[in-house]
Image 1: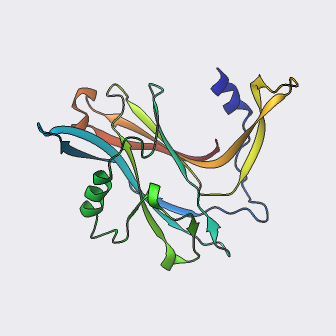
Image 2: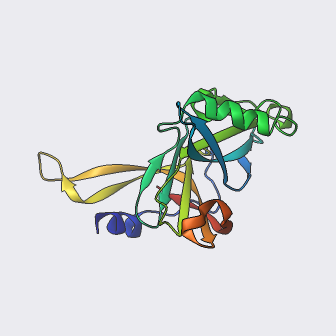
Length: 200
């Protein structure tokens, strides 16, 4: 209920940005899975990832401080990079070496995007496997813009009884749905249902 109240009260991203606001251009691959075998028995462990390409077409260098969450329709929220061994990125990098020669992991990405096409950044965002009962997921990518807003928390108060302030950032939401039997996740098709900018 609190989340619903926050969402209903949250402002929308500006249609026309104010002076000083910027948003990086983004292209993205749809989610893919990769399975690693580890341990003595070679137990398979599944991970999910997307690759994004960021291009700074503003007239300035911009700061990049990302936050990327995956949320299932069963309300499981997983931060990117959580419980992801370094070997996973290396496997992804090798898989896409021909297309993304300078692919970098989100956790190791520099916090600045230089101007121009020649300085475009290819970044892998990785999550461990999620609830096998999930039929859809939403991916939230924050840090692509400096647009922000502050709203009052609908419930929480400070020591003086005033509503706590909640800081929101312009965020790209990608919504996907699985088609097929959830028990056969590796054979399921994942389909983009929509994309939009929100304040989160």
